[in-house]
Length: 387
Image (cartoon, rainbow, N blue to C red):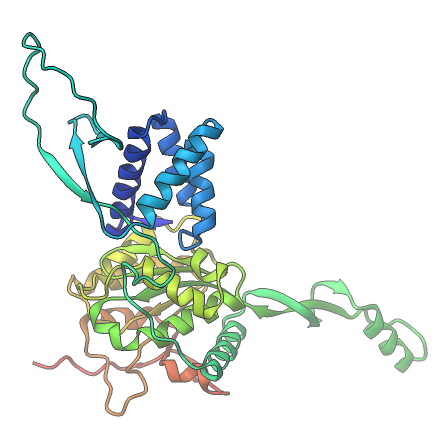
């Protein structure tokens, strides 16, 4: 799910999908608007890196007969596995495109002097798209961490899940209210000569947490991208109801890509999904988008985890206002800053200073590898901003 406007990679892919349908239509296959829409809907539900599945989706939505199936299959192999060839697309001005010229030797017809001259329309040259399992992504490559570090980060994610736990685990503990613990009641009665003097009660212990992760993929976080991705992947792995969003100037949900693949495959899929990390950061704007669309996402049992350095090109106060609203809805707010444990670090960035009053835990990536990470509200007194 994408909150806000569609991203550039998605718009580019839809344009190429439209050109492919125009190519199939030029081969004599009747491809209507409904079939084209069905193919677009199917593309959102499958893994586009899985070429056999993508090819089968094209055949199932565009082909209406065995002859059409052969034509669509031939057009798919030519279009998506081509070698950079180009075809001319004639823009009709009505939201559709017609491939020109059609495949095969054109028929020569004598010009009709009575026919009106064709209108002047712009011609656009659209390159054929290619598919390759080893081709570079539209986004950028996320460097892999070692297997040992990935396991350590996942253990740290489990520790964080226990610190902010709001969901019951498998074990029970004593409580004043709850179900009767028959075993403990019988043991207490034996100490009183067999009389049940007191009913002992129990409740499930809180051991699990639910996370909503906001991962900053802007240019200032480029060198820390791999460790932040490892944290986001670990949080999604240890919490079934976790939701993960990447943001720079808008939110893009990547939860399905993290759950569908292992760590290595997920890094490749997410790297191809998100935009290049060379733009600015709008933390306040992105947090506001989450607040506006947080119904059913951020709940009273959810913990919001922000992976960011706090650099914001927008209004810093906007980030504080959005976090204040999230604080009222969520169970806790955790901010993970890549510089938090560096010597001499002080929260002087505007967005981070505005967010500190609403943060329950302030961690660095190193804290996920510690057996006893810090707890409690950070920075009770914030250093003044430099002049």
